[in-house]
Image (cartoon, rainbow, N blue to C red):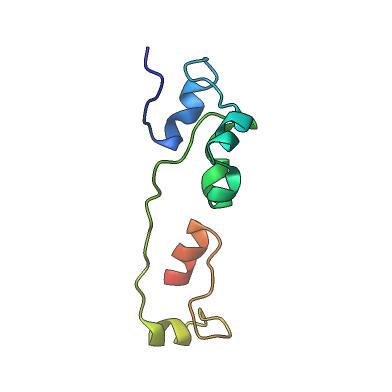
Length: 98
């Protein structure tokens, strides 16, 4: 059996409950310089199933939003610095587009 495999973090919940992947020893990872502080909290949290770490993020797919700043300003979507205010959820982004 392989010692290391690559898969999307979205698949973790399908493998961990059945014992198909082993949990990482966090102390051993730290010995090699890998800690949760090396990753954005939202990314690191996806490496876990029921609070146990089963994965190390390999890459992150950035999503970029291009927008018309004048239209966003007219719609009240800019923050006090003139930048697009955080939407907070996919639903909020969809609502902002309406």
